[in-house]
Length: 115
Length: 213
Image (cartoon, rainbow over the protein chains, first blue to last red):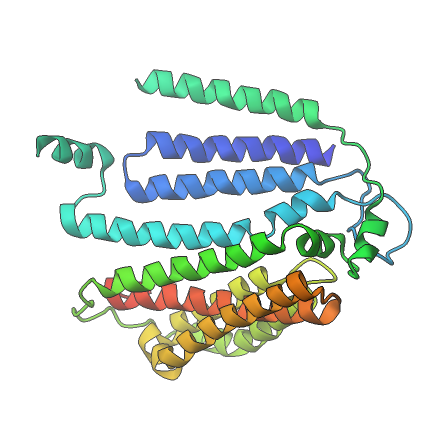
């Protein structure tokens, strides 16, 4: 049951992030929304790994059901990659602000079409 | 247009909710003990990383190093922040707390990196925690003073050396079939070092070119 709750919470988190990504006009807010949505996907993978009364999949902890190690191994490095790509895209936002003096996406698009 | 976007988002989310409802309850996991001991590991996650995801992890370390290199090169094309910076708030609470906490943070990240093959943890979270400890120090002392104490060319050398050692460990495991606990612990320690230095580079670049922390 906890897995189902966590999975639904992950979907809600991804929805929140995607809504921020679509609705907000500021580029930095869009990036933060994308990061929240990716946090939702990470939480979803962790929720998929959940088993009722599961213990960590480590040898020597005694008998009993174990959680699924595969989604945990998949999600292992994603968090750091999200951090790295967020830092890199913030550098591009800095470039954009230096050149165009705005972070508003509709304004940026209008200026591009005027040229 | 906005309504279309909102409706399509709601439709996508309801599909996801229906899929999530159909996903649970999950079947129990079986046979992971044999697969784990076949790779000489005690943690099944470590066994999967060694057996199926080693290339992936190595390339992920490379992606991280490339992203940090991109941040470094991109920010170095921008002019430095020359205006007088806002002074660091030298509150005694923050200074004392940073002094007390930084040792705990360092030891905890070392523990996470060294015990990551047995439990939750590993190199990436350890490096992230060490980077947050450096952020705490930068908040307390000011990023400039911290940057004087951490000599950056040495740090760059350490970072690329860590990447090289990681590739060497990966080659030893993939080509020569070296398995066991020691390469895992060493890989975790070097991944932690690399991630922490990368986090400090990002922090330092953003402060020198965009202002205070």
